[in-house]
Length: 423
Image (cartoon, rainbow, N blue to C red):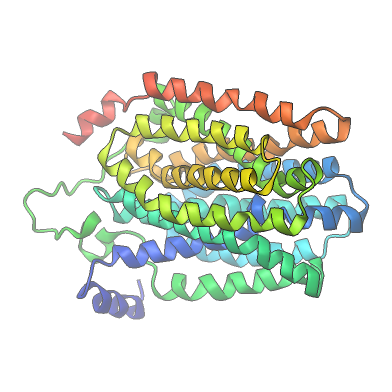
């Protein structure tokens, strides 16, 4: 840690726990991940399809291939976070994310589009979210749910701002120049706080998670947790992966095709369909702190089950968005859904497997989730291109998170091995 970082830490930590600065950095990271998120792509899909003469299925295929490729690299990224700490990994992630934005703006065919999607999904939706959640996880224990919930506000603001800003940039500068601007803004937003403010974990500055001083008798100095191999032997890992795979798959599909569904199936203007991301953002901002508090107060498996039921409701509600009022109801439910999911995103891995090897475990778990995100839009795209009833497809897909909720309510529990470590 540099002398500048040490001086900044002392200045802030004398006034309040420095972990809240880390929460701010993590929130910025989640916001900046919008460059690689499906809701940002949504306004670009119709324009790119028309300009490059590529069908929705072809674009979705490029998206799927790139995201699958990115997914299988995430376990390696998780190991790098464990080895070098999240700060340096996040700095390189942001640099490559900005480059990926510029590659996307230069895409002229299917292959270049796939390569650009790969950069944006791996460094944005994958690595940046992993690193941001990891650094906050290191700084909090008893208040981890609330802290990660606040981190999720960055995603809420991204969802509310990135689509309309993208639409504005497309209209005024063209879709290619829009991606150059998004890439440059990502560097400006993230590199200074990561370089000058980020600190890997509280133990590096002689304090403990939640701001507890090291000389407190009740503090357990040991950082404990299961190894990746141990976690892979736990039933809870597979229930979590199965359940969050459903969320990753179907929520990505809604983000990706929200504008298309509301425009083509219900006759809503694209500008109105894009604007519905704003009430979703507002609902997220309201419910994210509530979801975080619920995680700190109630049993985790019940909150996960509840979040899966809200995902089910999101899928069902968009199929009844026949007018603006019903579409508004959908957007609010979808916002509540995202509030729960984002609060859970970084919370579940240290909760069920401990903090010691959380980067490796989260990287492997997130690989599963990103695989889900990669294929999630494909059934919807195929239904549209092949002439099947998309609304029926969406309603049938809602059965998946409903089944996952049942598994979490009745079968998801913390491992006995981790329970013993906590004693």
